[in-house]
Image (cartoon, rainbow, N blue to C red; front, side, top):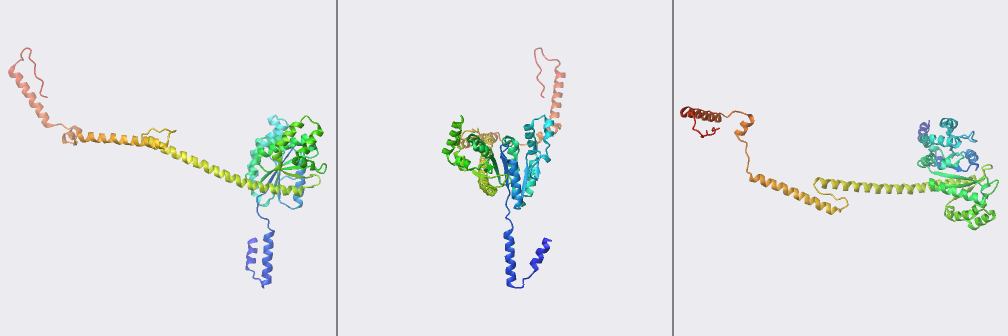
Length: 415
């Protein structure tokens, strides 16, 4: 049907210039309204238990659905009873969490970890499914288990994050419970965890302060930008960990400088527009970083290949020298190896020359008729005749002379 419409549109002839101009302007409007093709952005939502990850996922789902933005939802929590959003891909459809606990005699955390590991072994099929629909998607949102350490410090979490990063821009969203982080020590614990996730995953990280409808996140932004304000908050709490938290705040000053912060409310939806702007910026950062990383990897691979070729060339030369009779010293210089090879070659040539001189002194050798007869094992008539005559003379002498004198010896037969 599309081909038929294209054929009819190409066959139609405009009546006048005004009609043709209107038609061209309409085509340009349609082309400009078409979305540009780009890879979707994967968003992995992490956070402490009770920080509001699943509720935030439900709010993101409603926000994107309201604006008719194409997206994909993936649930990676095998222990959740019910999700407030409809997941396109759900780990519960593949792995039975309770059955894993029963078969392997595991507790709740061990069951979640084992179920996630089993799902990670088939995650290649998930990436193929997402990649097949990537041209029609804008975002891919992934909800993780409530126990953050299960995804962050397990092999399955690394496999999933690296698999996504290999096919599309990927960002980590670390959700912070804002009311609980009003405590300076709890705030520092969240910052340390976010810093460890950033340097472990090596992916762009967005720090999302959730529940801003209960407590605004302005204090957190001030603590990250003003060390004196954070020290004052520590002194007000009079905690024995105050000195440790102060020293860690000095260490995290560089981490704060390059950190993207967004305050949202999963209940009311406030701040989601700023969140998606930060997510798009993180996707752009990933594209730039990926290009630089690919260039670095290509350069590193070229250097490794050059070293391999040079090593292979050196081994080939060493084999050639050994075949020539040279004593190859692997730690020696190339000139020494070449000198040894030259000496070995000259000595071999000298030995060959001496053998040729000896052959010349012996004179030429010919293959005679006697050699041919000996080779064929044919009898020699002349030799047989001579032997017969000698035997006849011996017998005649013996008859004429009688017996031999005492002490005399009979000469050996002529043959």
